[in-house]
Structures are given as structure tokens and as C-alpha cells.
Length: 328
Ligand code: 13P
Image (cartoon, rainbow, N blue to C red; front, side):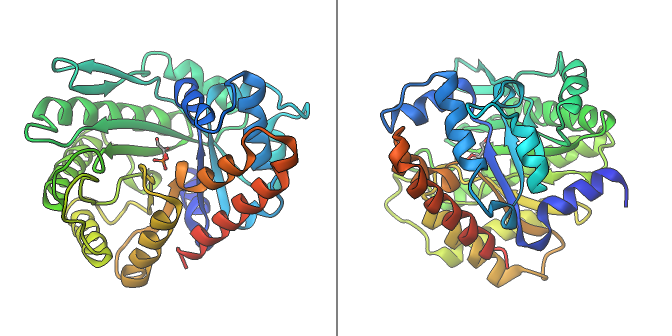
């Protein structure tokens, strides 16, 4: 097994998965505002410190994706987050994309950040990062995703994956179809997700990315939240796996889902059902790389108050435990 395959395996073995704590400044500001906390560097770091200091999470969490500022600055307790994670045996990941650029009359986006990637990787490696994440976003609708956005984002993901592997880091490839946004039915999401993944793997292959040294981070196939017919869990799980069977090569070691706006319970239940029905029947490990679904309950419980830290850590621990159990 080469080094990249080893990192990928470590991230998905033993029913463990990934915590996405790499919210950009803008996104983290929104998340903190929702619980009445001002978005200062101190508060953003404090929240991340509360999560990583939760005792025992290393039994469920194999890796954490961080945002640049969290890796760069000491936490409020004076320690570097990388030192805390190393002691716990949790692998360090870094968000490398630098947001999105609007085109098609502002309706669709492609992802920015390739320009300085090689230089940034030199620094991130010194700071302890061993894997990376790059997110491309796709809208679903009558004329979305367009052919142009499919190709533009697939090329971006392929360039990123190639550069990441060459730098010696394991790339998480994240093409996120915003399936919950809108009133479309589940068939529309299925078709969009299939087109996206097909194009992504076409370009990963063309760029000769080693597919055994990546993890795929996709959405589940869901109906738009404003559609009056909400599918049953079996349909969600079956359609999601059907799309992967048609598009994801067997060399890919693992699929780590994003939660994409699903609540913590839904994200946990869907993953559990996915593993219940398909574990060992598909070539890839089915695990998680959740942001909101892991953090939401704990962040709300904390709401910026020191007296709530214990309760927040308890809820965070329990959610990590439940999501990990959903992989078993
Ligand atoms: P969510 O689980 O909140 O969708 O976040 C995952 C992520 O990393 C988005 O880029």
C-alpha cells in the first residue's frame, strides 16, 4: 500500500469518519450568528477548541478538515490545534479551495484556488496536514447543472487531485450537488448527481489521478426540500447507491458523505441504512465527512457561554459516537 492509500484507509477504517470543521470565514460567521455569537478569531478558534478537546472523539473521528486560520493560529488555550490532534492520533486535513466564482448570469459557479496550491501545500505539510479537501458546487434545476459547469468543475477537481497527490497529500474530492435546494423530485437529483459524478471521474481518469489514493465526498440523492413528495429512506438509499454503482470506480477506497443541510438525526439514519443494506456489497467503504450534522446540536448548546461547554461537548461526543455506529 502506498502512502496515499494508507492515509485514505486510516480515515475510513474501524467505522471512523471525518469531521469537517473547515467552514470559511463567511460560513463560520453565519453559523455563529445563528447562535448569537460574534465572529471573532477568538470565538471561531474557541468553538474549534471545544470540539477537539472533547474527550474520546478519537474513537469515532479519524480526521478533521481545518480552515487555514485554525491551523495557523494558536487556540485560545495557547496550543496549536495540530499538536492536540497529533496526541489524539487524528489526521489533519486542510480545505484548499478558495471559494467560488459566479458565471452563467450568476446562476452557477466554478471553484477558485489552484494558483497558489503548490506553495500552500509546502506550508501546510510543515504544519502537519496529510490530506486535503476541494469542493465544487452544483445547482439543480431545469437547466442545471449546465454542461459548462459540469466540465469546468470536473477539470478543477482533477487538477486539484493531481496536484495534491504530487505534493504527497491525500485528496478528498467533493462535488456537492445542492440537492435539497428547490422543489424538484428525487429523479431530478439522481440524474444531476449521476451526470456530475460521471464527468468528475472522466476527468480524474484523464488527468491520471490515482483513484486508489482519493476519497470521494458526495451528496446523498434526495428530493428538493420543497417537493411535496418526500421519498422514503429506502428510496433515498437505493437511488444513492445505484448512482455510485454506475459512476464510481471500484478502486476508490471510500465514499465519505457530506451532510448538506440534513439534520443530525437524518444524516445519521440515512448513513446507517446505507451501511445496513449495502456494507460489503459495494467495493467502497461508506462513511462520513459531516460538518453541520456533527456540529449543529453542540454549537447550539454552547451558544458562546462558558457554562455550556460541558453540555456542548457531551452532545458533540454523542453525535460522533452515533454517526460512527452508523458505519458499523
Ligand atoms: P456539511 O456536512 O455541513 O454539508 O459540510 C460538509 C462540507 O465539508 C461542505 O464542504
